[in-house]
Image: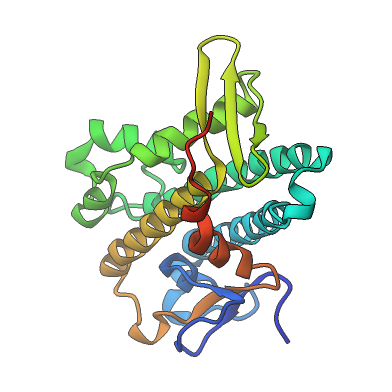
Length: 254
């Protein structure tokens, strides 16, 4: 039976539509059945994987609701933009949380001793730039990559959560556009919603996979644990569909 939304063991075969894989998930062990080979890392890495997996389930839930409103008979209903606005904001919040979950795992092995680096992604990126000599090379290679996608996400999320802006949704009767206007700085963005959500998801997944490769190198990760964990859930197909169809809803926003 398909799980409602949990991290489950996998046999390493290609994932089904109900499954989502990222290398970061391979660290997860339930506290009652910890792999002794990973026991010393459990407190840091399994917790990060657990948080990341929960955020993925939440994002799938919000995405499923958004995609449901795309139906021609529903998109012109007055409640469509209200519902999609709430779901879009929630998606951005969970996505930002997932970024910090990956950062927590990277922070664990950023230095030779754990708990020496910030555990949030913004803090970790800033700290690594100022303390490059202290950062282990595989982790530094990940943190030196292009994070424009994250800084953009952070700006969007902070504006709608902290700075009084709203995730206003516009529709032309076929697609949804995200309009964010700040009382302080004016327009933050006016862009098609689905491509934005899809691109951020793919950037997050790429980041998590790169982070896992770096961490695995530093902890001698058991080969038989690779691709051993997936998030399984009844709403996970929504994330796959989002990536598949986003380009079909990319008409420039007015």
